[in-house]
Length: 277
Length: 277
Image (cartoon, rainbow over all chains, first blue to last red; front, side, top):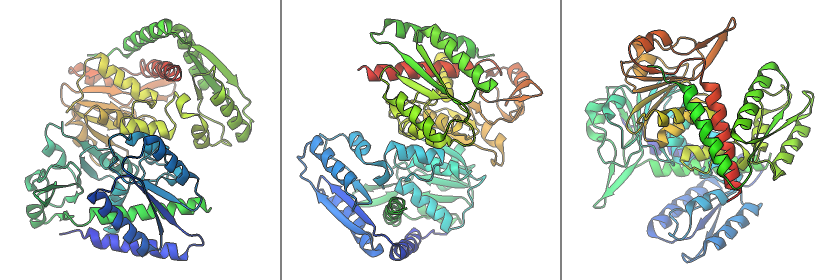
């Protein structure tokens, strides 16, 4: 059975749109773009499109790739202080002469709608809901909610321990009372962990890593990461065979981008709400 | 085989003492005590004793239990601004009329040597070593280091997902390339997870929860939590039988308190070093 992540994202956008329309305050998302490469421009176009759809104002600040780190930090500080901006992001990747860590730390935590600032990462881990969760794992939680997938007491295996997916995903799942296993590239016997799991979340960036014989029938597979080889997009799970034997699975590509952007809009609305309460 | 946590802590204290003695700066730990109950006084006595041993100056600020939250936050702000204090803690528990969350957030992250501020929790999760790790899990990592227990690729099961032990423990282990499973009170079949693990860390607060038939021979058991029943101290693991069949295990009581305080001193030295560089 295919989990239609796109449809779930569409419902989420409708919900956010309604929240924005019925709120007494306006909602504005800022984007700082330092490097106009094709991928970043494509991502930003998506964000602009969905901001417009949901009624969130979209402000973009384009800066030259040669900008100094100090000047960029000044621009971030301007957005921090600008009351008309509720939340903002600095589009990654950054040119090499700029430290991503410094940039992340410079964004005011209450406007950090990407959820990358350590204070937001920490709040999510300790279960403090005033924090902003990283958008991709938050989108996965949205899928569980929409599909009525119970998490309490369930065995969930996350394959891939990155800072933007695997680790914050584990935090959200621990707080939902799941029994969480996080695997990484040094894990000796991946099947040992995937085969005893009710849910497997693939975020490794290794095409076809999860095969059908590594899970039991009835396992829900969420395939997050994708890899492009010769212009073709591959997921981490062997989709065809896994879907065929009756497991629930998300197709790749299709849902991660659109769901991640939905959660960015949700975070922006949340920031505006916090700032107006 | 018994892991002698006390001996490991003693070595750690010697090491910190040497670091303090040979450093060009002085090191000072502050403690704010709001509520003079017997347990808190006992803990503070330990901290004072080991601060003295390692050459760390110890400053205690006792405040009346009836102090308002606002006044306490002012006292915290004073310590934040006091250049003669490198790191400080507010001894828990606090009286009910004071929010522990507000207190934790009020401590300057660069002086938060308990490692409870969300920014430090987040830094530890994303592997940013400028942060301060929560002292008890940091002490467990010290045991692995001292005992030459390899973590890369090993299966580690943590039983108990608390904010002060289980969750930060999982963060430290993920960053050490372990495959980490975190169980909680809703975990359906604990044995499923413990029996496939090379290392089991018990931090649940359920006396005798881990029995010998739940692990394989050769498993290292770190028993962190303890429960006092009728004045007798119980660990989470069935120590006698587990030790008998040849597993490495830490005895309870004996090491957690002294190792946790050692890591508090280490964090204080680290704070002083950061502030003087």
